[in-house]
Amino acid sequence: MKIRVCQGVSGIILVTMVTSLMLVYNNSGSGDRSPSSSSQRLDAPAPSTRKPERPQRLPAPTLEGYTGVMDHKPLKMHCRTCALVTSSGQLTGNRRGEEIDRSECVIRMNDAPSINYQRDVGRRTSLRVVAHSSLQRVLRSRQELLNASQDTVFIFWGPSSCMRQDGKGHVYNNLRVLNHLLPKLKVYVISRVKMLKFDELFKTETGIDRRSSNSWLSTGWFTMAIAVELCDRINVYGMVPPDFCRSSSHPSLPYHYYEPRGPDECSMYLSHERSRRGSHHRFITEKAVFANWARTLNIHFHQPDWKPAAVTVTASVNSSQAPSPAGT
Image (tube, rainbow, N blue to C red; front, side, top):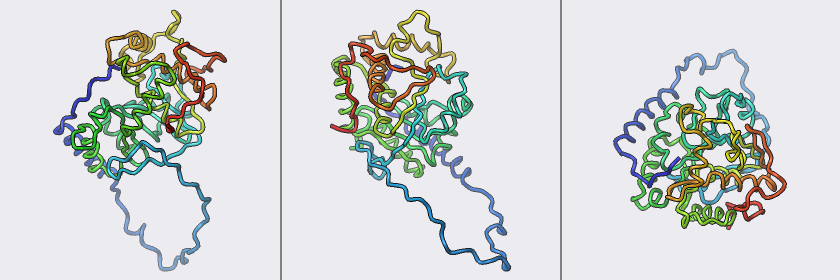
């Protein structure tokens, strides 16, 4: 997907959509309570005052570089097992939904839906990583947004021109309006310093300077790097190996499972990888990095199921060390 230069989200559209969200949101939370259900029978035994003992759970570690748009507090989150669900057409018809939902945390990207696709991609969403350019599409997914509002963490990324906090960051301003109207939403943004670290990580792992090559990191790059910080084990669903599209026998599948008539997945990967005109992604290069990370980290690929080769997949990946996106 071609990332366009940051554009301000229309205030009228945003307020209209969020207002409708609020109406559904408030109505969904109100239920009829029978007066008799809350009243205690006079002849009923007195309830025990002893509280059941619960196992103590250690507090989640702090993940630096992700701050709440309202309280500016850092994100605290940790998962033992994560299902990182891509948006690929590889997932269609393979019924991995129940397997995905058994993970402690389920991670999705942008506006990829689960409603109507539960059998293949699961129902739950613990974390959704969203590009600045996908904000409007996420807002249009009203029911999906509401269903996820109670326990889903949203992390938005974008260039500093969109996310600046001095009143001139259009996406950041709209996220604050959204979070003010829906205060139960857990909305975070990636700080400018953290964004620079993601750029540096890409250059360290590939030898390619993102800025000089006039390319953009994909939402998949941010999602995988965040998952490395967040999860002890990562099961990735729908990500093909880096050499998949170079084979003449690869199947033709849609780029997004929810857009069956959309562009072909491999055509999208190859056109972006070969482009030199700017505003493109290095999809195949990123996948080579992920394969390299999987040699030393607890990362596993499903649908299609594959393992990285024992040797370096591509010469463009010049680092064999595990990534440290949260570090220096």
